[in-house]
Length: 410
Image (cartoon, rainbow, N blue to C red; front, side, top):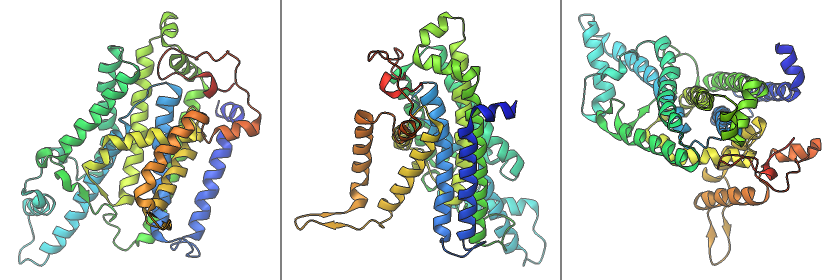
C-alpha cells in the first residue's frame, strides 16, 4: 500500500529527499557537528522555520483542501508549546531547587522541594502554590500526551459546536479568531496558572542535559523538527490522496452537493479540523523549546492571520506550496525585522525595513491574491505544464472557502 501511494505521488519522495539533504547540510555546517559555518542562533532559526512549515501544512490541509479558513490554528500551536513548556520549566526548576537545598544540614523533604519549585516559578506573579493545571508537569510522558490531548479536545469541542450549527465562510473564520482571542486573554491573567503575561521562560535549557551545549541542542531540535515535518508531510499527502481527500475537496467546492449525496459533511470537517489542530500543537511543542520562551502574546489572532498569508503566498491547495510559503516568508521576516536588511536613505526619508516589513507583507499578500492566486507553488505548475480546467470563469463552489477557476489545477 505504501509503495503504491509513493509511486502515485513522486512529489512526496522528492520533498522527503530535499528535506533530508537540507538537514544533512545544516548539520555539516553547524558548530556542533560540522565546520562551524552556521551560527547556533541561525541553526535555531532554521529549526523553528521547519516547525512553522509544519503548522503551514496543517493550515493548508484545513483551508486549501477542506475550504475552512481557520484564523485560530496558532492557538493550538501555542497550547502545544505551553504543554511541553510546563514540563521543561518544572523539571529545570526542580534541578535548581534540589541543588540549592543539597547543602542543608538535613536532606530536603519532597514537600520542601515542591514548595521551593512553586516559589521559584510563581513568585513572579505573587504566588508559591503550584496550580492544578501543573498536576502532570513532573512527568514528561504525561505532558507529551497533553500536547496532543488538550489542543485536540479543544478543537473537537469547538468544531462540533460550530459544524453541527453549519457555520461556514467568514462567520466561521470570525468564530475561530474569537476563540483564539478569548484563550489569549485568559492566559494573560495571573490566576490562569500559567504565569500570566510573563509566560514560561528558560525553555531552551533541557533538564538532565547540563553537559550538552546549546550548539548540540540546536542541531538535535533541528533533527526533531525535520523528522516531524517529514512525517507530517507524509501524513497530509496520504490523507489528501485517497477517498477522504476527494471528499474534503468536494466539500470545499460544493458542500451542499456532497451533503445531498449522503456524506456526513460535519464529520469530515470535524476530523480535518481536529487532525490539523494536533499537527499544529506538535509543531508548537517543538518550536518553543528552540525559542526559549512562550507567553500569551504568541496566541494573538494576528499570528493566525500571518499563517493564512504564508499559505496564500506559497499557494494553497498544494502541500509543497504551504511549506515554501512558510519558509520563504518567515526567513525573510527574520532578515527584515532582525535589523540585517540595510536601511535606505532617500535624503528626505530613511526607509527602515523593521518598520516597513508588515507593509511589504500585506502588499505581497494583496498582489498575490489579485495577480498570482496560485502563489509560489504555481511556478511548479508552469514548469510541469499543468493547465486550468475550462469552466468559463465559473467558481468551483458556492462557499467563500471554495476554489475559483483561476486557482485550480487539473
